[in-house]
Length: 294
Image (cartoon, rainbow, N blue to C red; front, side):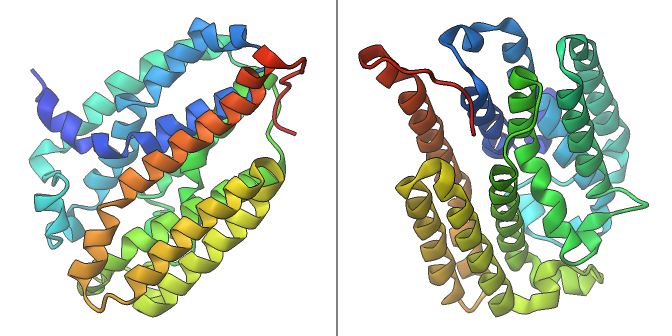
């Protein structure tokens, strides 16, 4: 019998919001009526972006990264180390939990299927060879656009098309910054293991600057859709980068990094309800056509 608790830890529940959150935002952004939100097909894929998709993303990462992870204290006191004898269990669980959702693709438009395929490829080859993007500076951050793919998938699921390029670009810059910041606490360990990342290339200060620029650019692109809320979000992340940059050691940066899931969850919650309220709640009081993102 598989160790369910262990597999749950490998899927990193604290980070589930990074896949499920974008899916829900993409769904609400694309919906044109409240009835859309009651479609059981959408609920099925909301379930997918909990443990199945997260176990895929983080399980493949941990299986491929044992040689560096065993040197990283974060893997034992904050995350979970996948040792060689656990690899078969983890990979089997990934297959077992992900394959059943393939049957649900018969209800999905071709555009959404293509997006889900992109999500799978990005998730696997971020860590796995022959690409192993995480070992290629800048490509490692670029591949983290995988985290907005659930939102793009949901949008395409509902509408049959893709959201505006500005929305995708804003999300991609946000995920690139998120990844780059997460790599800062690992600079020393990665250098010791011979792993090149955006953070080992740019150093602590350069990576903080990269994150700041990416967050500001993301905020500017999001203003078209979120107005002043996009600026507020950009200011929050920019302030976090400024505070983090004054920490001269790994422990200081890592202590702030541990708050990131909370900050991202709050931002995602606000984003979801901003879209929901402006599209649907106001329509209770005023005649309007919710439409989708444009």
